[in-house]
Length: 198
Image (tube, rainbow, N blue to C red; front, side, top):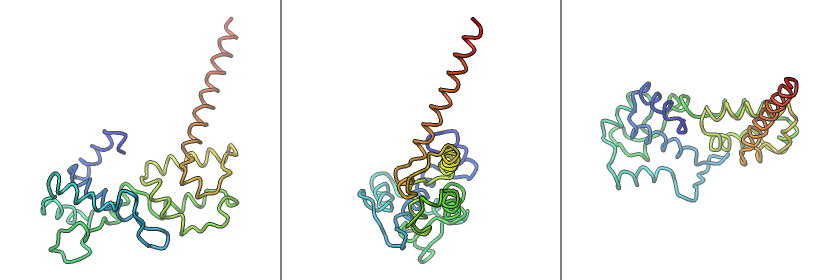
């Protein structure tokens, strides 16, 4: 989404969100991903995502109460504590918002089911969900992953452990191989056509 400004602006307009509201929701969602398969908090080296909201608020400006209430009214965020406390640590993104942009357990299940069984040995689906959600993140990337996986299976390229394949984002390698093969096929056709014309 962030690689295509048209899609980003269209999303903001369609869902009546400001840049700052989207950033707030995005960071809240990122904060929710900072858990392992057992639900324990796992913080990245940069610190918890929620700290970015406070950093922005201190350096730039805080989110107006009405702006946050708009997110709650639209069903994109909810309070975890008292409804009169507009504190980021006491808010979370709803499934309604998550399903608009981000992968969830259902997308992880589609990937799990499609991945060759021998490469899933010793790994549980439950442990793959948080890894898939953090690494793949968006529905757009999920579609790319599934497309690369299916193509890779057809061409016998999927021979790594499922955890390694996700962690190292091997779908990008498969996409690269696919583009190279397509380019080679196009080039071979051009050479053949060129030869036949002489």
